[in-house]
Image 1 (spheres, helix red, strand yellow):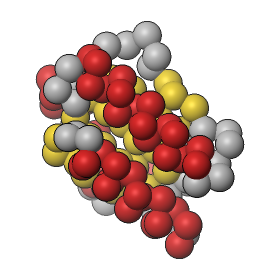
Image 2 (cartoon, rainbow, N blue to C red; image 1 turned 135 degrees about the vertical axis):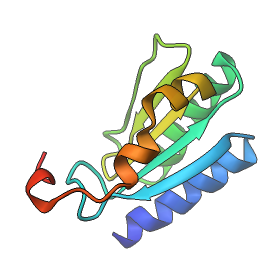
Image 3 (tube, one colour; image 1 turned 45 degrees about the horizontal axis):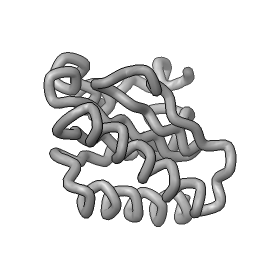
Length: 116
């Protein structure tokens, strides 16, 4: 988990330095086995979202995770960067508000519903 924590912090800094908006990190321990952390951020345009996803992807690859990938390549308003132990969602603000991932993943989930 220490490597995941370090990577999480690097990704947050990368997003922040590239002007991503409303960056939120969610610890998924005890909530899901899909990853250790989820980061959610917003971009200001489809180009900004694309650029942020590519920068996050490169940061993850440079950390030694070779199986990472970008989902939503054909979408203009959402990208997901799967860094195995770290998932990064980058939305336009309207889509982000619609899906409310922060609310969904920040709530306590009963233990019997944790297994995915």
